[in-house]
Image (cartoon, rainbow, N blue to C red; front, side, top):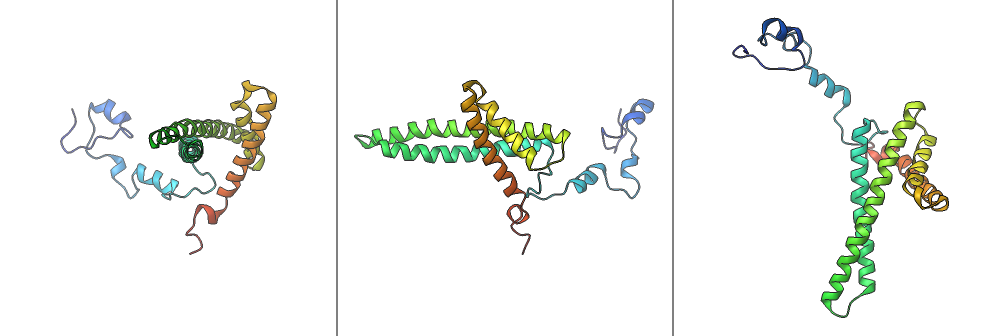
Length: 190
């Protein structure tokens, strides 16, 4: 049974709960001049929204990167599909709209899935390489090449090599562009 007026906290419950069967109202975390545990953790992380040298943990980087490339891939692929649908045309306005919608659905999903899957492989390989080496351009290039090669591994070595080179160029250039402070924090020079 919890004492009246007691706040329930899982983080410091251990011996207190086992010895008394309840939580005491005078928790050590609330006494003293120290900030609460969650506030201390928030101060360590920093509360900025700009990416600065990939200071995120692996899961946060994975979620952010895959989401961004999926969205950009959907926008790019859908625009490309719209252009193809307009170029293909149709005898009537309904057929033109149908052609555009078909191309947008086909190309938007394929480009966004390609981007998201290769990004997922890239972040995984970069995190794995980061466990063994310091973060440098060779980790980025190696992780990007492995992600492209793995994405097309079953289509033969020539196709896998082409995808490895293409993803190596794209991901390495994006990684280097994101490491420039003025690009990641546009208000840094103001």
